[in-house]
Length: 125
Length: 505
Image (cartoon, rainbow over all chains, first blue to last red; front, top):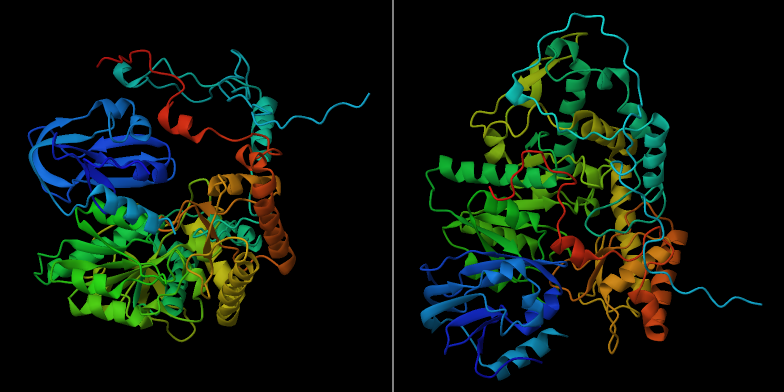
């Protein structure tokens, strides 16, 4: 399972990069959602987000899902390119599929990659 | 020479052009006679348009176009339609006779009440019957569909709290198995949604519920039986927890088909519930409507019902029947719809259905619906994993996936079409992987249920031996596998643009 070890993960399948302040949804989440066809951002640049608050909502051919901020902080960038190419979330969830960047990010209730992989495996049954 | 086996065709075999594409200038369906009334001036020019490209066809072209389209359709009159949570039961044809009786068909909602006493009596009686079936104290017939009923119900819950000066209640508790309309109805009122997880047996997780209950809770929206087809084993505790923190209990009536004549949500302690007349009480649906979503409320909410409700405005006397009319509840939230609900399409059909079955017949409906679902579950559980495997109510959810196979629920659903069955609901509820949600309803006999179970068992075998047959299904339908991703990503919302449309504006 693809879960880079430098990232932190939430139980609701978001990732957070403490180094860059970037956040998004995990590769596991995109594979569960299948083809993502729409994303709407719920925060703007300059806004302060709290951990656990919805930052975006995505729709796939199967379901829609809210994406919750894995960390608190001030939003410095929103990846608007995803609006035109939501399929990037399927092809590169941890890279070009980043959704929002924050500065001074304080992670909320997160776990490391090993714990997240185990958590995903448990849910598969 | 023998020809090789025909290759599997997966692309569309028949393409019916749109009505615009078969249009040809000058073709006419009707010839209008010369006007025999004086002409009047046209409205101001800026209210007129010159660019309305209506298709031009002869009558026979129009008839054939729509006849061909209708043959691509699949309905419950064609065959089995086990679309979970939608209760696609057979709709008796007597409904079509009654809703076309001239007294119902050729009336207008603005007629003086003295001239439509029959219609009002039918509405009054429908309210009374729905009360008796559900155990609620008051009913509104106005809402146009289930989700509209939810919105109406949540409005009444908010009005109730507000009337008591209890203004800090903003949270609605909604289980993770809920229909998506529940959080949507709540969100439309600006309330926040708190998701309550389900436990391992498919019940509301009581600990999580208890933790979420406080004095900011508007209430809880619960479907019981839930979308897993499970009757909540702690329903009385769930309701007590919500009531103890001052919240109201909303019942999503989508699954009422499991309970008729057996249990009344009002008696259990629910405060509000919408009915889906188009599910439980045989109003045809699919293709977006028309639905009908009356709402029942407990006594403490009756004053908040939408205005007007149908009531007796003059009591019966000697040989004279009562006079039915409209009554405005004291603290009404107002109108939810122009006029009085889906009268002919919804209420007359449902009235007919309830009258025809009577109390014992309604109970039979639910018992057969539950029996049919359990029979199918029993026949399929060894082939398809049923994650919440206990006695189900009117529907159950199986997983459409097999260990070591790349076949998915969607492939199984599409393959069922090759066996002439409508697929079950798939990918819902979200808490089951590759969900196949199967609701047979009371309509089907054992032969049909067996044929469906046989097909699903055969498909499971095909998934092992020839998975590509499933990946490329359906094969025998007029159209092959639709490209759902392309349809969702490349939206074409309009076939033409007004001549003054500027894309850069």
